[in-house]
Length: 193
Image (cartoon, rainbow, N blue to C red; front, top):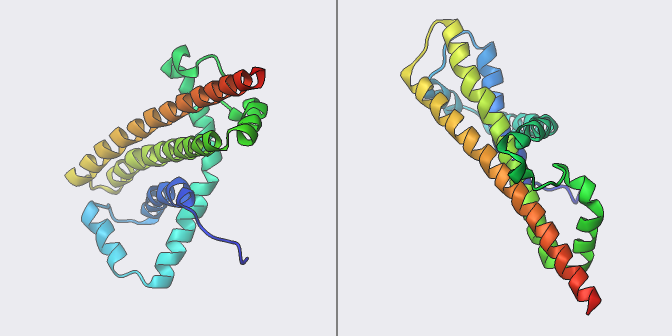
């Protein structure tokens, strides 16, 4: 346990995407409709232990939905067109030998590639988190008999940002494939010389 620590990737890839999902889950069990002020008021009186427990649950939710969000991402990437896929598989595991060669022969490129992988994961997990949140909160409020304008604005913002994040995930996906291909080209060219 001495080496256990949270990284920026854990924060952006799991905790932050887990927060909207946690709020949605809590609001589903709450009998009163929610608006933004209700959500803020509920967090003002949280103790440190309750806040840490909420962050732990947000992390667990974000981490556990990461695989599901990846599967959704895999289904949505082809919708952007063949140009976006560049003829390569969506999974980078199928290019594992090339990635290993980059790690060995071009460590700086490997570091950039890992950054692209992390950003891609953060973006598709954020998309997967904001989309159900943006749809679920107003539906929950409508069923409970109260639909507030601020919730509708929040819904619109969540939906816009979820699709922006999806588009960014596709960009990082493209850049990763480009970096792998370019790095392998340079490595092979250097071997010949």
